[in-house]
Length: 467
Image (tube, rainbow, N blue to C red; front, top):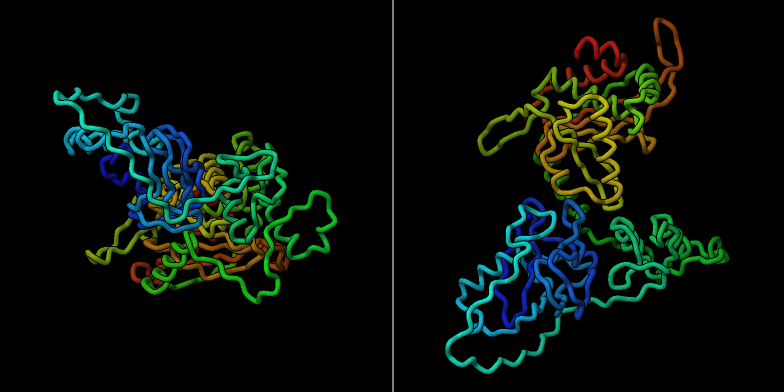
């Protein structure tokens, strides 16, 4: 993580600027403060949680001392580089006491380096600040501390009535749950938690929202949550476009109006694929992972990419070149409470089937927990989206920016199908392949889609034939 360099301390007050925790991001939404003015904090103590266009991230403090001011409100969008918190480190000296400006700036850099989980740890992590020799001349009278300038909006921290609470008395809840509560207008402090250890769950938030919309069904239940009153007479509700939703909207508009999309469809008999899924689930080497049709569809796509590598490419408009990737970072579109995210399994083409299953499991669990990191969503080369989980047969997916193709597969359902010359009921799905027509022509796109279909019609024979 690139740490925004702060100015040297003034009268012992350190200013912490919002760093760029992603790849060139310019802003982030401050979700939660873990501290309040007057709190004593340590180096690397988590002080707040932010949401960027790519992930939810906790920020550690590079300073130890007393929190002086919080300069951003929860829910506020803050520019990278803006000061969000000031910390009194207890030195309280003037500029004449601290030596040259260059030395003070060097100390500032050293204190900002040791952030847990970001970059290389400096050797100065455990080192105390250097003591400088006392000046030979009599010390100047101490400069009286200046009154603190009021922050634009110091965060007011309500006390949570729940039995368990997190930092600063807030109710315990995971980041996606807090985001959901915010979108639904539910006050977490008024929600009765049912999770282990007094954690507020998604179901608790939905129940609280439903209690407002349908009090006749929930008002008599013992211990029913009492969320913040919502105006039910309003004819519309506005949801701020921030974080992942804002990034996704901009990316999809850019993709749709930059890359000329073509989408082709193919219906496939996946009866043998479903039988293979059942057999794999019984194998010991798949005991700790979830085997689903997605696993074999991902493997079919990877085999098609190996046979037609030009589909795994990107368009370099600056140099007017097509860049073919010799590796596959397989993206999986995931609908989460924060919006649509597309994390990817790195080097999926080099994995065995059990390794790929484990990679998909970790990817989906991390996404659902709202902990997908910016690195997990960067560098994708080709993507799969599963619209079948929503009961949809097919779609025309929009390309993930920078990629040449995206595969959508619909629900698998029983359909009449001609099999070996007879009409039978078979397991059938529809595949949709969208591709960038600047670098993928109809022939290449059709061959890729055909090969994916072939691999799903008879996965075992295809694996033997294509390796």
